[in-house]
Length: 55
Image (cartoon, rainbow, N blue to C red; front, side, top):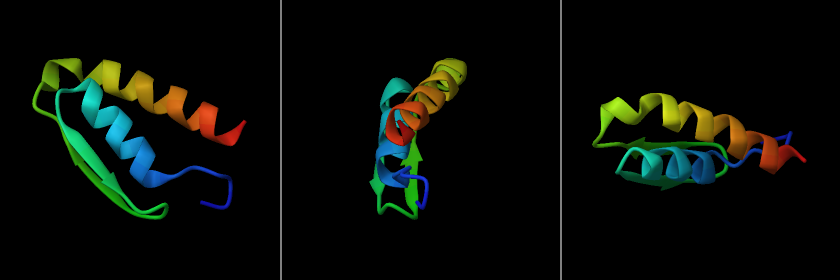
């Protein structure tokens, strides 16, 4: 949170890549994805979202 990363936005973005949904507060979030075969895509999206949020 101190570095500008919003957990809710991160969880939602990753879960959507995997066919699910999520969200939450800046400091705590939950998500679920339906397509585990897209896990690597979700992890790649997580890094992209973090980079976008801190820059």
